[in-house]
Length: 160
Image (cartoon, rainbow, N blue to C red; front, side):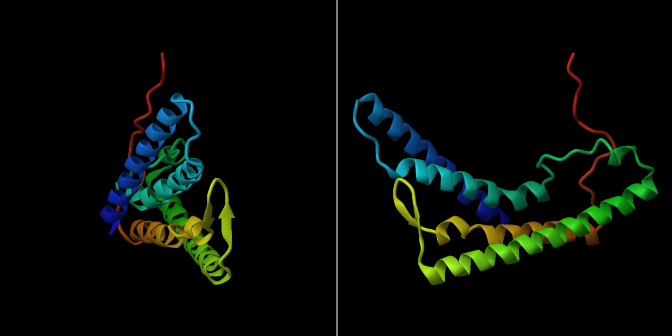
């Protein structure tokens, strides 16, 4: 399922690229580009971020700061990590539930998001519940397993 979301995010990136090229080309020819381009790009950025989040967490490719935790003694570090994973799991589940409520309300009310083109508001909330739920699953896996997000050494390099 995670890889399906990654492929969907990749397709959205390709679609956004095509829309930007078409938009710029039309502007270069002194014509008015389609009004929906900006709205689709904005939605696309949200979709990419949300669809990629579970994969990035699973593969440990997301951004995090480990300056404090890597300096803790091993025993305390493990405890702090588990507390962080538990907190992140609960927070992700809260966001998943809240965004599911927003999605259902948007579907029930039929409200439109009015930008360059009218789009149903539910389209804005569509990727959120699934993505947050999958992020919660990934944090729960870390909480129950022996894996860690943090390495023994940070890969950040000091600039000279």
